[in-house]
Amino acid sequence: MFEPFSTTGIGSMPHTEVLSACELILKYFDIPFWPQMPKYSQNEQMITQFCEGLPGITLSSGKVYIKRDEELITEWLSNYHEDIFSPISKEYAIGLYRITELINGKKLKIFKGQITGPVTFTLSLKDEEGKIIYFDETLRELALMHLKAKAKWQIDFLKNFAEKIIIFIDEPILQAVGTSAYISVEQSEAIRLIKELVSFIKSLGVRVGIHCCGRTDWKEILSIDIDVLSFDAFSFFDFFKIYRDEIAEFITKNGYIAWGFIPTTDDLNALSDEEIVEQAVRKIEEISKILPSITQNSIITPSCGMGSLDILSSERVCKLLKKLKIKLTNE
Image (cartoon, rainbow, N blue to C red; front, side, top):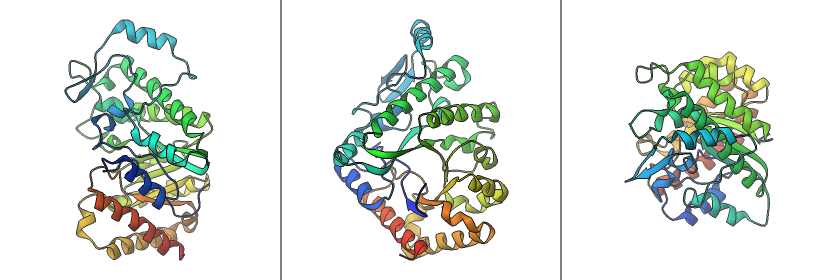
């Protein structure tokens, strides 16, 4: 499916100049992706970006929430079917449009899109009373259907520019499920929501990945019918390798691990290029002694999105990925 140690990104970029972000992606990444640009517009924040078109959604003074309108919600739910799509406009994803303009006229072999996952989305978005919508069953299901419609539109759009599409479902909040912060969130329900979105996306004929930048129950995630598991391997490699049996089974089903070896935190400034690359190489060597076939099923990425970095640091991350690939493939 992918060449060993192909490079891709998680999504967010720190730029306010759209063309620069797109050119950087097309220059450095084997699997290009469209840039999410939270510093360019508040509409490109992780939750807000996929709220457009959600019944009752309200943006006011930089805040986004659902203003509950029972009639509107009931009408939307009654009209929903899985062929419905919900466009993402330029006002919410300028990078999506700019990068596809740059590649227009030719078809890439593969292109990566992304969408905020249903658990993170519903545990982050609130109604007008400040209540988290996850805990309202109707709004939870509404959000899941809405994200399906967003995914369908995005996939149909991207198919114009690439032979194959992969969509990463971004679920950073999974690391907190089961902790005291979200003690009332049942793991089984969180997994159900993700499974439904994964199944829907795969039914559209594209590959699916899940990205979580923290620690979570990888046994549960690896059991979902995904093609790629993406995580922060810089910080959580030792925790992840505990699941060697589950990883081995995942690989036998042609699953890929996207190793987030290049840090996008303060660790980036604390270490030299050589230290970062050598740490990653040692980790791959260690895991490949246990699971020799894993090198054929590995992608390399930043540990998370680069949106919080400055531009020079994001450029360094891109160059480090290229250096690491050269080291791992002996190019």
